[in-house]
Image 1 (cartoon, helix red, strand yellow):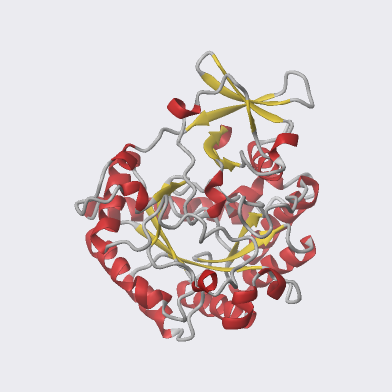
Image 2 (cartoon, one colour):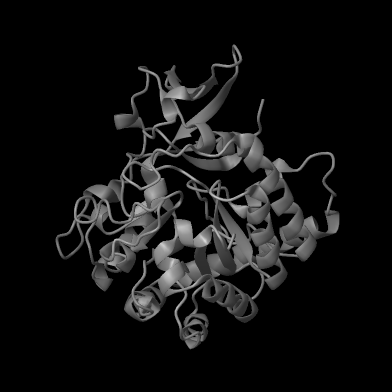
Length: 396
């Protein structure tokens, strides 16, 4: 029997089939395909408070041994490879604020979407690489714009969505994402960040391509942005241009590395993430990326490749669990060895990827105990929880 973190990884790799007993329309958070392509699956919570977004519709799912059943009002995941083996699956409610409109009359679900425990906003125009037909091969960002999502959002609309999510779910974090905007992504995002910072106590995360002028990162830190992430996606320098041609041509792999290094020093350990998609390069390259980022003080968001429908890689198979699990085991060891804090910020649960803190699910009898470092992390979490509780109290 797998622990909850291991099961989350295996669901990413194999997907989840639905039994006829399921009543997800009334019991679960509905699947909304927006510009965040990995949200194409079903959000729910496993035991040990592990949140997962399980693939439902991709080409590999019909072969999955995992089947979701409803029995006596509860949901279970049955593993058909072993008779009687089942895991609890706790469905998440459909957000009520999805059915409301902003003061401008736009449905709130077209402004932001719940990703795990927090609302995410793709505030800007379509990624420029899609306009050039030079987009990343795995990417679904341009497939749903204007259908399930507004192309551009007003600042007031974004603030209203955050407050609605805060009231309903107690969300603590608001995540902003942009595509390529010819080096102006932070500049275009700036009015949203200023308004959210002024009116709320939310922790703010920003994910956008590295801009040429690194002084923008000093401005983000001064404003009070809490977290930055950079989607390099492929650490292997030869494979990078094959998978991410626009990034390779107009930004360059080196600028991503320079930005991660610069911002890690500026913001401090653990507040910067490099993002890598595991399964599109050899595992040893992904581990090398985790090691490099950690030496600079950054953690790594390790995404499991999902061949999302409509993308240029939709028919490629996802990676095998047996090849992915050692990546997370080694990542846990690297972060402990380098003293990179993980899982410090309170109230953030990510469903679409394995969080760095969830790498601990993959340690085994060969893993050092790291007793002192784990104790330090415990105290850091307690301090962070008190700090952000106070911040939200004064600007909820």
